[in-house]
Amino acid sequence: MAEFIDPIHMSNTRLPSFKFLIGFEAAARLGNYSRAAEELFVSQSAVSHQISQLEQQVGQPLFRRKGRGVELTVAGSLLLDSVGKSLEHIRNGLARIETYMDDRLVTLVCPAPVASGWLQPRVDRLLQAHPDLCPIISVDESARFIDELDVDIAITRAPLRQEGVFEVPLLTDELVAVGPPAQNEDANLGLLCLEEDLTSDRIGPFIRAHFGGLRKAAIYDDPRLVLDAALRGRGIALVSRLLADDALRTGQLRRLPDSPSLPLGTLWIACAEGPSRLPLVREVFDSLRLFAQEDACDMSQIDQSL
Image (tube, rainbow, N blue to C red; front, top):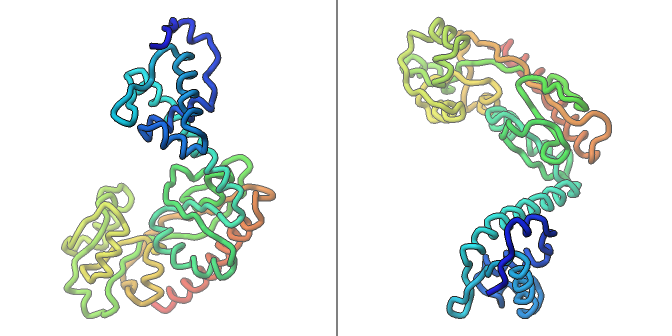
């Protein structure tokens, strides 16, 4: 057994060699020195020596023999918990750097309804305009802050007001009533809506005032499910116009001509101020703004025809 070292003394010693920790983690994960050596492209004796040196430094045996392999001791399990997490954190950091250096990747964060109804149908146009682009599209709004590593472009429901960020209005949204293309089906359909809209201080009174006479066909906790139910012909849906955008443009759904809408505010688009890490980031930013401007003109014409 390795010589015991007092923990207080251990806390004052230098950290073990990174090479020792890598060999230890591989042997612990694979349960075998030979397989660890193959993975690390070193000899089995090298792995054995690294672990022996590490055991001398920590003052505890880290493995015990088990059949033709090894298993962790209690001390080894405790060490692996920290080493494994640390190495995974380092690997993730290296992967983020690799992503950052890839000049094809542009990361865009967007609210899920907008990503589903407005952005996703325009990805083909975006790729036609930028053939080298590989977009990373996320609906994780908690990661919306522009840092040019995790997020290049953000579409948000309110300005970020973040230092070093350029942001402008992109789109306006509203709550609209949509139904099947056949007008004669409207009278037999119930209402599809979000549970949170019914209890909202602002949207709830609007629904009760203008759609209170309709029976409730279904209530959901995700706006995309509300839209899906309308596409399946289950009722008249109260949804974000941007979420329903593609279905309206393709004729799968239509806006009810005599029903009022409720403004839902402006969406903003943001990217780093000044030169971006890649020219492609600003090019994608400008393309999205152009798409939004074109769509605003189209929607204005559609609304006038209702």
